[in-house]
Length: 132
Image 1 (cartoon, rainbow, N blue to C red):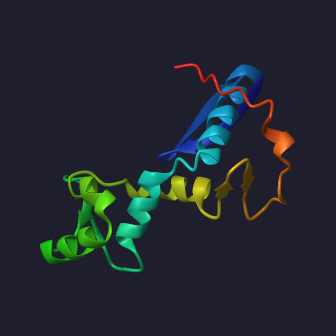
Image 2: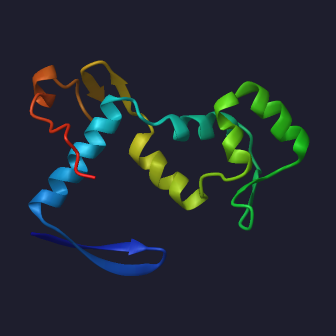
């Protein structure tokens, strides 16, 4: 059993991961990357684009900008329409960035900026039956 302390919203929380929970987490993470299952994060990043100074409305829980900005951006990123009503919280966006920034999934290979190319055999034993 692995025990570690992590900072969650400024609170030091002790978490315990047994081997099975760790395996489930890794299997889910690998499966999602191999399926390139990051569409919401990608749409959010594309919606925001290179724009800086975008505000965050904590009540609406989305980007706080003028309607003109929304109209022009949503014409370019059709999949981002739902973010007008509910966006990705900046704190979680940072976590998603850490998880998916620089990750490329192509067929039976996955690559991150910190790894070399993985052989296909590496993923043969990945359990695709993820418990609900």
